[in-house]
Image (tube, rainbow, N blue to C red):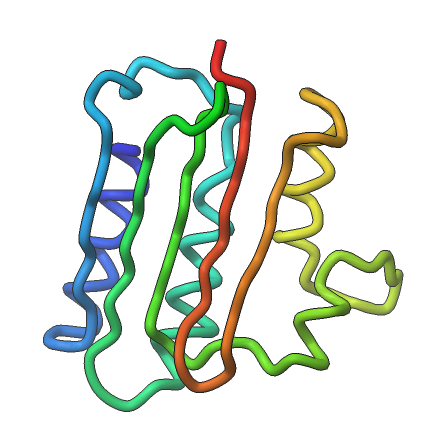
Length: 138
C-alpha cells in the first residue's frame, strides 16, 4: 500500500490538478499479506489508460475490505473506461499482445489460491472502470 501511495503521489506531481486518489481501507486488514507486484499494474492501468487520455480530473478510489471470508481490493476510476469489445478479450492468451499485466495478475492469484480467487473487471466506456481483486482471508 505504501508503494502505491508513493506511486500515485508521483503522478499527482507530474499531472497537477488532474488526479485525485481516495483511500477506503479497513485498518484491521493492513497486516494482510498479498503477493508482490499485484496492485501496481492495476493502479498503473487506471493512470495510463484511464486518467492520461481523459480531459479533466480523474478520481481513483482504492478500497480494501473483507467480504464473505475474502480479502477484497477494489480499484475504481472515473477515467476513460474500457470499450466492451476490448473488455471481453483482456484475459485471453495472445502471444501477439504486448501488454499482459492484468492477465498476469489474475493468473498469479489463481495459481497461488485457486480458481475461486482472482481479478474481475467491470467497465463502462467513457464513464468508469472497476477492478476487483479477491484473496482468501487468512
